[in-house]
Length: 222
Image (cartoon, rainbow, N blue to C red; front, side, top):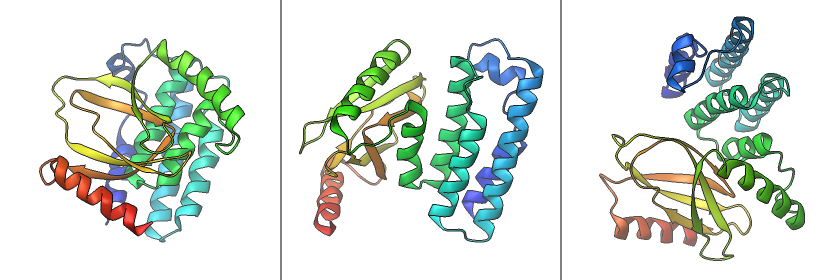
């Protein structure tokens, strides 16, 4: 059994919308009927993803399955806090698979950004997203070394006990330039916008010099 399946099985048996989980987010639990529905829907998704992993489905097939359940579960009937809770679980599942296209599209599906190729629409939607997210979350921005776009990381939850584990290699969605990102310590949960996560370099193995060398290697492969 591969690591993907083990992680998915672990999440499946977890009571994802229990009273304790709501309270851990500092929220009052939603209606029991809604929690039961969300729990069942996520378990159906996880069951199908486990099956897809065992039958070696392609990344595209997994992505389509992921998108189907995202559209089914994240509906307009959810309030802001419920919607954020749901998206965080999708984010957790996406990170298990580490399929770049899913990580990118999760942000698109979440924030309603239809097409990164249309500069005007991108700017308007990004400004709207940032205005909304700044009210709720801290944002870390790093400038793309090529096109100067601000590559944004939304900090959903901080915990000072969390060390800084890795240096990320990220790709700007606007110009495809590769960049380094060190988010720093104390970040428990996050999402990102305007970039794709390509590699996570463990700090136990990579200092800044080695990370820059790996970045150069990837750029030369493009």
